[in-house]
Image 1 (cartoon, rainbow, N blue to C red):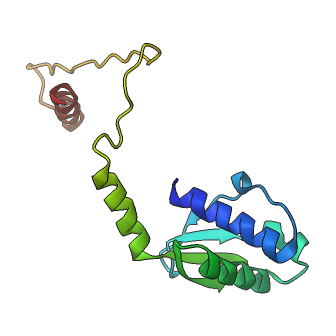
Image 2: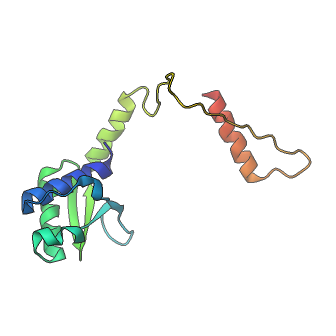
Image 3: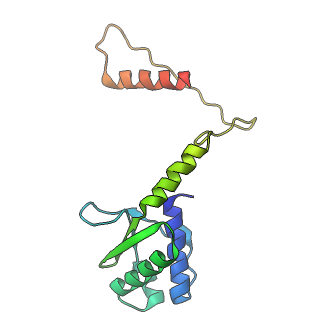
Length: 148
């Protein structure tokens, strides 16, 4: 499960636990936190204000504290107006990398009879023209795909 899905589900669980309202996790989309603020991902809390009957800062504070207490991936949070900036624990990223390392076929989809056919077109640069960087990149990519 991706970190976006984990945080969306944790947010939906917090809204249900704190305010007694079911909010679909699919509608919660964490965004990358802006560089000038601390955190990895940001959740906009304005959609939850109707359920909380509180100010955006108070709602974000309550949801953030619930997530720190109940979600293993969340290390800490900070609130900027109606935005909940979440910092992910480094141990979470370590566990993700360990999972990837322990899965020998991670990222590969087994080929079946129903698999989509894909054709890769190899580039052949025109030797009468200067080699363009994009042509070189395509040639490298195609060679890498062919070798694997």
